[in-house]
Image (cartoon, rainbow, N blue to C red; front, side):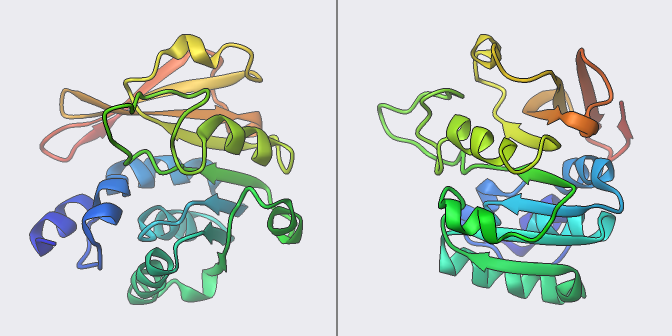
Length: 210
């Protein structure tokens, strides 16, 4: 991976491969989202390269993060260590949809959910329900809401928001980088600040605003 691209996206000379780079969220978004978890004990699903893990660890009291891919977890451990945050993070290797793993997670105040949207193929569609993300986004959200009502989940901008009907009350925040709508983040429980759709923008000059 081009180190300059990694620094630009994640604000540090971290380790990434092509998949964890694509999966990783821009540091301006992770810093913004993690602010909702200030001082909390956080469960993170789908660690990837650990880029959101680091933002959550800086804001929260402690992060327990679950990853199914050993290679991705190794990257995340190295990145978290290089940021000096290893003491604030517990890594768990396994399938977050395994009820035994979820039951073994220590008490938490909230959860951050980021299924792997970096999927493709001729049959791929950006869906929330019955999605082919790893793990499926709707199943993952329902699974985590059994652990805590305070959760945030990342969704791509191309989903049909009508698929979100029937979910518990939530705030749908649209995240923009420059003029591009990059992501949605849904907030549930005490992470909500509004019952309406909100937005957060990062300008191409690096200035942020709500």
